[in-house]
Length: 233
Ligand SMILES: Nc1ncnc2c1ncn2[C@@H]1O[C@H](COP(=O)(O)OP(=O)(O)OP(=O)(O)O)[C@@H](O)[C@H]1O
Image 1 (cartoon, helix red, strand yellow):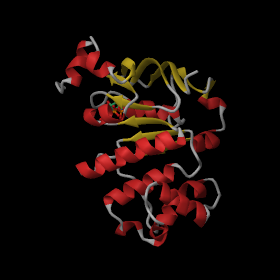
Image 2 (cartoon, rainbow, N blue to C red):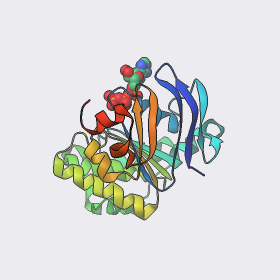
Image 3 (cartoon, rainbow, N blue to C red):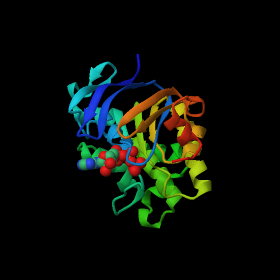
Image 4 (tube, rainbow, N blue to C red):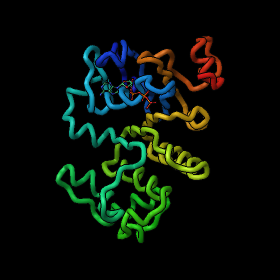
């Protein structure tokens, strides 16, 4: 059974009758031209938006049948430019706990940093003093606070230079394979999508033109996909 499934999902004139699924413990990237509805789709998966028609299923059940607070622990999200609050790295890692009236232990915080190859001395550092690459690592560590089953990543490398982009890609791939999480990742960068994807979803103008194992992006007969894969968009 797919871990997540869209069934005839439409939303606000932005998404049109989307039906498709995501395999568990895989990296699926959302690709397609700007304005295609990628972010809108991602927000449907953790209940930030709801369909006007159709349903989004998590392990076979409509996501709105779940307690939405619990669901957001299971399905965690990181956005473009890694929004951070003022304060220390610890304060930022603690944020998802604070939202749920919990407190993150120092030990767990150190463990989370270790997962992203940072040492515990960073916990007391103000975030304004850390580098862009370290910020991205902290943002990624933060998505793991509640031991999620699914990570939703929206353009997490778009503000980084090429070397750091590759570092973060390797990190996500390592964490995905170690923790067996399901990753759903929006990227504007088709080369990045080719490097990291097991599967892809190709969206255009709110329609899902094709999805499945990533190779289709270079083998599709669909003229729109062929043009996109050759950079003609
Ligand atoms: N709250 C909203 N109200 C009305 N239109 C919206 C809203 N949010 C997004 N849109 C529109 O819906 C379309 C899809 O937006 P979305 O952000 O999902 O696309 P995207 O594929 O993620 O785009 P990009 O790659 O540029 O980030 C766009 O035309 C956008 O302007």
